[in-house]
Amino acid sequence: MSGKLALLGGSKTLEKVDPDTFKWPVVTDDHRKAVLDVIDRGAMSGRDVTDEFAEAFAKDFERKHALMCNNGTAAIHSGFWAIGVGNSDEVICPSITFWASILQVYSLGAMPVFADVDPETLCLDPADFERCITERTKAVVVVHYAGYPADMDRIMEIANRHGVKVLEDCSHAHACYYKGRQVGTFGDVAGFSLMSGKSFAIGEAGMLTTDDREIYERAILFGHYIRHGQIELEQVKKHIGLPCGGYKYRPHQCSSAFGLVQMKYYKEQFAEIDKAMTYFCDLIDQLPGIRTHRPAEEGSTKGGWYFPLAHYNPAELGGLSVQRFADAVAAEGAGCGAGCNKPLHTHTVFTEMDIYNQGKPTRIANLPDGMTVEQVQKPLLVSETVNNLVVALPRFIHFDKEMIEQQAAAYKKVVENHADLLEGDAGLAEEGGYSATFRSKK
Image (cartoon, one colour):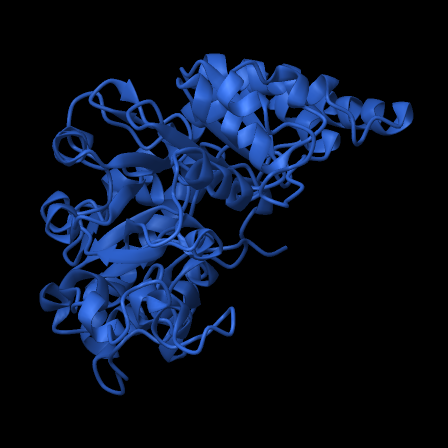
């Protein structure tokens, strides 16, 4: 393919993009009717639809218990408390993730310990997880990042050997599988975000799942109070009456109603997304400099392909920076962004901020006097460089073969003309994270 790049004044590969190709979630008349029924009944703060949805979710996502919360942050927060995370505990978490995978532990008096990610999966590096374990380690957060299932065989072996609780953050990975087993079924507890951008999108809500009855009941006790009739265990029952975390995590039933309808559609929708994304990835994987981020193991999948990524190799494109590459593809009218989440361990909330006025950074507030942040956080090589080696891809909701091929053609045009971009290349990525993900515009 030839032609002057659009970024340099040439014609765009795509002059017009059909917004329905990327519009998510797909809203049907069934969804509208279910939500309006809740509103018409004045049942927004009720429990009937929520209980039905949680029961259906638990069944489909292969856990005995599911507790719906008002968002994924609340579900993960409840999960931490339910497995016993508390004062002076350490909780290990990969540095490349959204803040809601870990920041809640501050309110429980615990300290985040950041581990590096594997450069291939972009999920928790099992070896670095084990390096981070100390006598204070209570739990580990396993994030199935960008829908890529983490190495659960190694992680669970390490966690079990050291007596570390496992919380799976499945907010990117609804209905993803690791070697034939659904993620969210390995650890002690799992948390899911169900906000409108996620693969299982219902508006704004979260879900906690577990096979452990005590974890389930403790999660109810932490952030709910009108559900206390479900509490059976004596060690939990004696505390009922008020939400014992001081939080109100009850969801809005309009989201529950949307979610209950979504249970009927998501597998079919995920299958179409997978067909579309697989076709697109197969096309761009033929290009130098690009290798898509998807599991190769038999039985491992990407589910609904939330936040699809590709590995970027600047050496194969004359040293062209990921930011310049992404800008050029976007200028062609295709979806492309530079980078992913910035490493959490470098953010001020984890390095210097004193949230609760304790006289020192909250990160080390519950450690022995004299401890510094530098003593608890070593450099993380992969996490600190990955944003220059990752590209955010468009997420196709429908299998529109022509549109997918046009998007891939934009990538091909930039690759084949990459030498023209080297002059004036500013270098490192300016902005990563979800803000760089492609969003269609009418």
